[in-house]
Image (cartoon, rainbow, N blue to C red):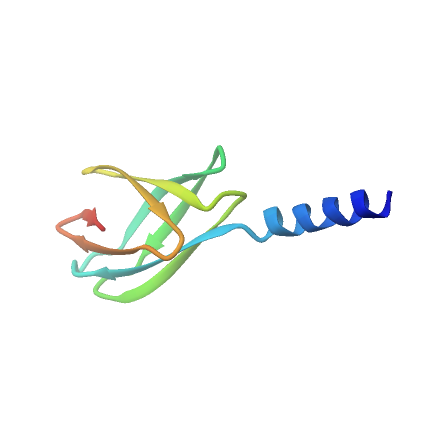
Length: 90
């Protein structure tokens, strides 16, 4: 019984801390706020203008889908992307 409780607590802790962190460089002089889907939920992330930085999408998964005017981009934790002319490339 103790092993079951301990296993459940560890699983809950891992899922609660799941997130996707992505490094980016925005070569455009415009900031972009985009819709992102992680673990079935939709959120928004903002990429600041003319900046290098990182974003973290909180959720219960290790990858997410970012929706842009140039199409969908699937990102995993640790990915690096470049934003140029409003499009995101890995």
